Length: 355
Image 1 (spheres, rainbow, N blue to C red):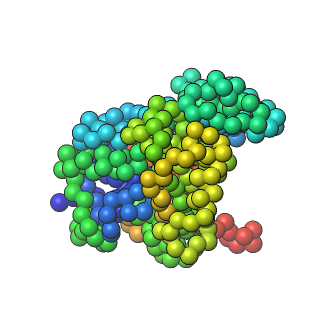
Image 2 (cartoon, rainbow, N blue to C red; image 1 turned 60 degrees about the vertical axis):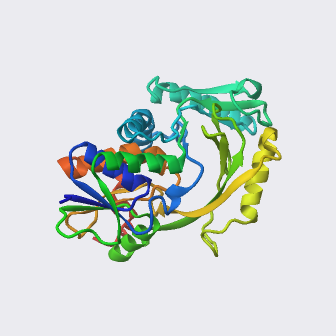
Image 3 (tube, rainbow, N blue to C red; image 1 turned 120 degrees about the horizontal axis):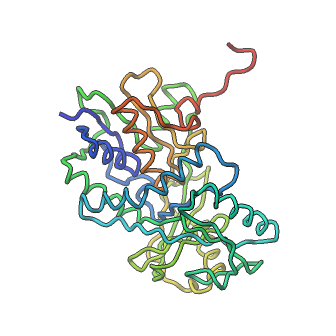
């Protein structure tokens, strides 16, 4: 009988289940629909760091996760025999004006110290940047060697294969099995709603994103980021681009003119993409916690229940470290979370006149 039930088969739930099983725990995964039914089944797969400035515990946590990603995904692949599409090829960012150039140069100096010599952030002439040629108003770009890519659906398939190899079942359902000792709620948008209802707060909510997949073979190229736009070349000869961030929407699964604008933006930024065939258009809801950070820790008032949610835009990049932190908490009682990721961070701060 499993000792731990992980509720949700998205990137956070499957990564936690894999790490727990790797450390000897008896685990079962329960999924209401199908693996990757929510935001984890999307297209983009950008594992990109926050800027090396305004450093804090959360940015350090993310750095450690990104640095651990290569080993984590290699372990997943070797365990289950399915490649997740991981490659650390870096990221290029066009610099729009002189202010952006000055900031990027300062970030390069900060990265030299903060990234422990394990990755670089440089300012380059756009013509010298690797990969797709792009338009830059200043003729300069920022290039970092920390960013990586994953193919989201292949990553989930790799985790599913690895869990099967470890004897972990993934079952359909909405409630934990009886008699499990611990339950991890990693069920995305619906989980945030349930958490908020139980605590009497607005724990977070869905943010719709739209993305597209193009037939454009730049498989050895770094990803590109510009405001409102990620371009991520994948190993199979496709290129994913996205995404919108919509707080208001009528149909969470529909694509529309907002995605058309993202595709047009990509073609203007990288002329080589003009006329590329659109293979797929995708839309889905991403779980954004009230704190904007992932939420990890004990569920207040529910002994043995834990929350792992709020991946939003950083779930794939943060998954290795979040899974490790969850395993530390459940198996050893060791709390390695940055304070901003605690469940209590979504609770309103008391007014000065309240005790």
